[in-house]
Amino acid sequence: MKQKKTLIWAVMIGTAIVGLTACGIDMPKETKTSFETMTVQKQDITVPLKFSAKLKGQSDVTITPQVSGQLVKIAVSEGQQVKKGQVLFVIDQRNAQLELEAAQANLQAALAQENSAKLEFESNKNLFEKKIVSSYMLNNSENSYKQAQASVAQARASVNRAKVNLGFCTITAPVAGLIGEIPVRTGDQVSPGSRLTIVSGNTNMDAEFSVTEALIEESVQAGATQSDKAKYMAELPPVTFVMKSGTEYPHKGRITSLTGVVDAATGSLGVKATFPNPDGHLFSGIQGTVVLPMSEKDVMLVPQIAVVKLQDKQQVYKVKADSTATAVEVTTVDFGNGKDFAVTSGLNVGDKIVTVGANNVQEGQKVLFPEEEVKSEK
Image (cartoon, rainbow, N blue to C red):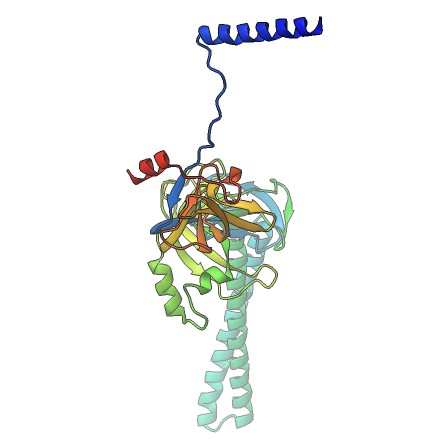
């Protein structure tokens, strides 16, 4: 009975296979894994080096009063564009005006005293020549005259100081630019330690960022003079500023400053790139990215997909003459373009490596087949 059931099942399975074949359905076939390869070559490339930066106006000035008093007028608003010399704030001038008037009165008194002393001295001088008065009286009158002259000079200085203090009550913009935050209000009592605002001179903006000491040393040797650094900066290509939103600022900038002091904590140097700001679109405090395109010659580039990472090692699969793959350890540099690595050791020009499918390769596996060899030769 068992033999009869087995025979029936065999007939049914065979009938099903015939039926599937008759309906045109193909049975699964074994397929070979597909790989792509490339031949390593050297080439000249332009590498976009990217640095996080913060913008600052070249003439950012903190506005503080030079005299104490009550703030009676705020003539500008936050974010306003101002010209050099434009009135920003006015401090109560009454005390300063009274001090000026008092100083001017003292000057008039000193001038009158000087005039009297001068007349007495000249009179005694004539009398002395006629031997009517003694030399003692002449010397005394001369000293009184000189003392009166000194009092006049002192009174004039007091008048000038009072005029300066009166002028300090009206605060003007030292540079053209944009008004920053205004933390005070009309009626506040201010003093020389009070910060009224910041005027950001935004005709040109500096993007401040840091670069590694090694990067600079590759181009500027230790002990280079200031003129050598200036020449190096002049030969650098223009740089681009990219906002946090990804928008590229339309005007190019130039590297204008390299600090001579290395930060001991980070091992980096400060750099400034200056950007023109004719339309006032850039503001102090904006953060973004400075992109410096650097040219590199004879670079061995491989796609990032060709590099397999194993813990702290990197390897690529090199295709041998028999079309099988063998793992080769390499060292690479990431230039930040998101596509390629520069290989600095482990490969030679002319080596053939696996690109697409490198993660699936096993040691000694055949990765190049006759039909693929023909395609690659074409």
